[in-house]
Image (cartoon, rainbow, N blue to C red):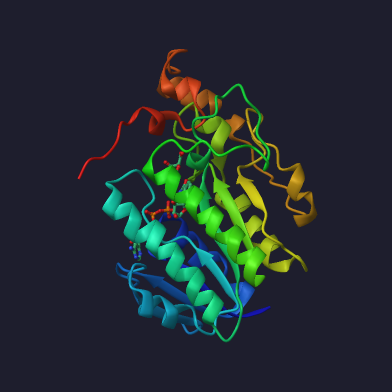
Length: 266
Ligand code: NAI
Ligand code: 15L
C-alpha cells in the first residue's frame, strides 16, 4: 500500500472518478487542482495549486510515493494555456519528483492525440511513431518524452497512458474504438501501482473494444485485462446519429475532430 498518493486535476472528470475510487491504494490521498476541491474526507489532504507554479508544485509532490497526474489542459487551446499547464506543469512535476525525499511512481495522463494523425486503418502498438494532431497532442508527446528522460537518467518510473475517450459511455462512432470505461481505467491504475517493476511503458488506455485500433501486447506484464467493450453501445449511437462520411476527419484519423481543428491563435 502507498503511503501518500497525489492526484492532480482532482476536480476534473477523471480526477473525480479517481478521488472516489482510488482511496484503497494509499493511506492518504493528496488531492490537488487549481479549482474548488470541496471538503476533505478523513483520509484526504487538499492542496490548491497551479501546475505552472514551480515552488508550489515542489511542495505538492514532496512526501508522495505515488502520483496520478491528471491535471492540465485537456483539449486543444492557445499555446500559452497549453504551455503553462502541460509543458511547464509537467516539467515542474518531474523536477519536484526528482528533488523529493521520496521517489514517486507516476501515472501520466497522455492522450490518443499524441498519435492522432495515424489513420484509423492502422493498428498501433507502443513502438508507433508519434503523430500529434494539435498543440495539445504535441504537449502530450512532450510529457511522454519527459517521463522517458527522467526514467533513463534518474530511475523515476512512469506509466504514460494514451487515454482514448474515458467517459461513462462512447459518445459517437469514433469512440466505439477509443472508449475507456471508468472501471477499466481504475483497474489499470491499480495494476500500475501493484506491479513490482513498472519501468516506463506507453499504454493505450482503451477498453476491450471490438473496433479497437490499438495493441497493448508490449505491456502484458502489467496483468491488466480490460473487461468492457464499446460495441455494446453501437445500436444506441446508430439510433442517435449517422456515422461520419468516409472522407470526414472523424472517419479517417484516430484523433478524429482534433485533426481538423486548425490552430488556436492567441
Ligand atoms: P478535465 O479538464 O475534466 O480535468 C483537468 C483538471 O485539470 C481540471 O480540474 C482543471 O481545473 C485542472 N487544471 C487545468 N489546468 C491546470 C493548471 N494549470 N494547474 C492546475 N490544475 C489545472 O480533464 P479530464 O477529462 O479529467 O482529463 C484528465 C487528464 O487526462 C488530462 O490531462 C487529459 O489531457 C487526459 N486525457 C483525458 C481523456 C478523457 O477522455 N477524459 C482522454 C485523453 C487524455
Ligand atoms: C482527449 O485527450 C480529451 O481530453 C477528451 O476530452 C476527449 O476529447 C478524448 O481525448 C477523445 O479523443 O475522445
